[in-house]
Image (cartoon, rainbow, N blue to C red):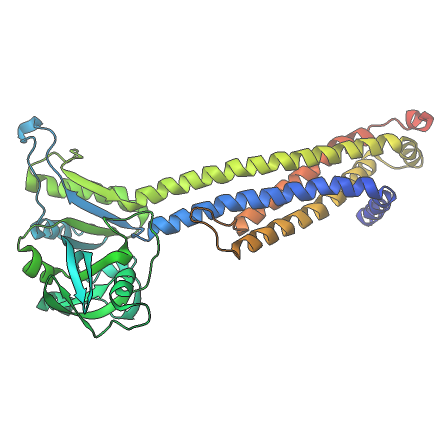
Length: 414
């Protein structure tokens, strides 16, 4: 009952000073909208770059051969490392629990791919079926390379989206047609769904690649037992560092280098880059949140000043209420509630405006690297907590001052 009466009195008092109340609310509205938009932009920035980096394969580790850097301990400095399928079998034999996939890749470079009168130099890879998941390819038409294709060394190929469009055009189907790769006839069995631009690439965009069964490339275009790289997919990004340590310790005795020699094996860890981006994105969100909170803090100071003015203007009223039996907590609660009646509705309007602006911006095509804010649940929770904190902050000092007024002095106040 006390809270209901306090709310009624607070609403009545604020209606008396409509203009002052509306101007004060505007500062809170603008501040909360700024918090939602800026923190949301930080979230959008992080999600965009995480998505772009993940196109290559978010749990992928690429192991490249290097050369021995140090000659200490009997090792020969400058020795070139050449990876073979023996290394792949050695890694599989460890049965390390965090290895999900282990596959080799080879590349004969850019081969000439011809269809009728169209001809293109295309970055070609010899791969295994697991590449579909490891490299985050999606099938747009047909099917992907399977185990039987690799086992039999079939002359089949899977086209990146851009290569398909350049050779066949956007509207003509490619599956079932034949292309010539360096003069050798290949059947097109599938086409990838476009990935678009990528932040992480390997010599070329994935949309510009031609994928062929590993054994076919090895037999027709390479003719050596050496691998260009070993592709490793881990069960979780959390275990990437442990997997890299196992890789180095397993291959070091096979090639005669120290496990801590970082140049002997050049390892590219996609998850490491994504982890760093997560940290950067989190820091950016905190920074932008603080920037937005400064605007909100200014609005909170405005609310506090208004409430302090209200305390001074209503000193005699406070004295009368205390004289007829109102306790300190009643006076404190009244002014605190008045502050919250200003900040909470204004904050709610500000949050809605921030969400609306973020949504509206997301409906337009934006330049690359400029992303729309995302009003995620985390952003809304942060905005709500900041809004509540500002309301309490701006109302507590005036409420304390009002509650401490001496009723005799208050009655004498003019």
